Length: 202
Image (cartoon, rainbow, N blue to C red; front, side, top):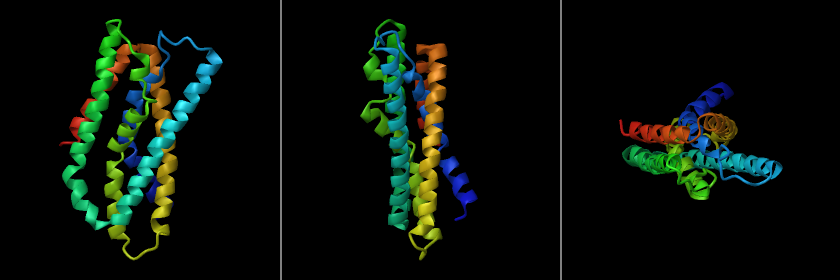
């Protein structure tokens, strides 16, 4: 697979990932309960952005390689349940954002609970947006049968780098939106994530 094809495929696999992190990024905007120093808060948020990006990229890449490794055995499995897995995970994340946004608008805001930098929410979001990578890995295994592991390695590296950049772009864009529109942006983001999840079923 040439670099241009790998890049286009990686970008297409990251489309849902960008939408998800853009919506979830609104929860990383400073809230009224933040009382730590500006320098400490800046460092904390920088680490949060970095580890979220690396988590998404790692899950994407692992799913791609797992699909390639198991090949045709996974194709039927992915086709049968991938839509429902993605739907349920994004319903959970989006529903949580929606409820927390509504609570915050009513004056009941639990800042720590609504942040994306919680391990569980990051993992669920990463898995929900990485299932397509599993199917792509399986299809590449069959298309390039008999070729060495190096044939998928280039795509894996490209996907990892592109995912990191896409997630950082989504999170930073979401922070700007969250800063401008506050908790209304969180409500809208939750609704969009639920919408993305529903779209998996059609």
